[in-house]
Amino acid sequence: MIFPLPTCQRACWLGQIAAVGGVLLMLGGCAGEQSALDPAGRGAEQIAALFWWMLGGAVVIWCIVVGLAIYAIRIAPGPHDDRQMRLWVIGGGAVIPTLVLTVLLIYGLSMLPGLVRAAPEGSLQVDVVGLQWWWQVRYPASESVKLANEIRIPVGEPVQFNLTSADVIHSFWIPALGGKVDMVPGRETRLTLEPTRTGRFRGVCAEYCGASHALMAFDVVVMERAAFDEWLAAQQEPAKEPQGPLEVRGREVFLRRGCGACHAVRGTRADGVIGPDLTHVGGRASLGAGTLENSPDAFRKWIAHTSRTKPAVRMPDFDMIPEADMRALAAYLESLQ
Ligand code: CUA
Image (cartoon, rainbow, N blue to C red):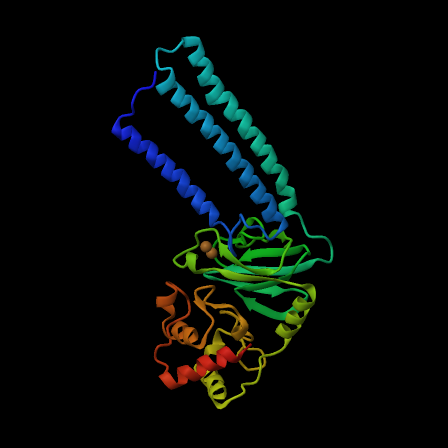
């Protein structure tokens, strides 16, 4: 016998249907440069497969539980048999969850060695240091290259990331390429990633590390081997000489204002090591670790209102620099391609 649902119960069911619809809609949007469900690397492929298996299993279990609830409440309501009730509680509440979780645990753990294995001898090595709130990137085979917040790697090859931190615990994560690994001060951790297609992806810090934790992204560009070699060779070159009078004045402002105490621009006397190396800063996709698009206006905003753009950042605001000098400085930095 089927009883009509009271209004509140109907609303509850409608809510559940809306929630399921919402989840499906959200899953439809799970693509793009920062999605673990749109894998572009071997590790991410495995993790995505694990996710879909878990989601499939969860949906099956959810349907069974809801089906049983409907059966018990609406189709055959009535007193319960004691023995049967105990069977359901022990079977459904202990035995089945233990079995399901054990299978999932074994499946998940079996992936681990592959995800954190060392890359084969001779693979590209990339050293990344996490700092509040940016990333220093170095290629040990090309000693002069020091990047900030941008990593480029070749497609179809395992790349070994050697990770450490200069201050607090950060976590290095490029969702589209693979899993995340903590960066711990005083220790070196390792992650091997193998991108399977070219493209631009977004990496993030996955461990709360202070006020600007959310403003600590980085760009990952996966390139064909030949294009990567060409790019790396260009990165080893010192900074370009300024071309026009505005850029010449910008470099003069840069050096006179003491920017070189914290930042290096190879080929000038600026050799600071506290902040990001700016030798090729104009060629990067973003400023302030993914905080601003790279443009002359963004440089001006960043330099004059640093602390407003990125709370608790170590670089002071240089809002005292006159407008004409600031324009020249921005043009100079933008020209450092
Ligand atoms: Cu670094 Cu969160």
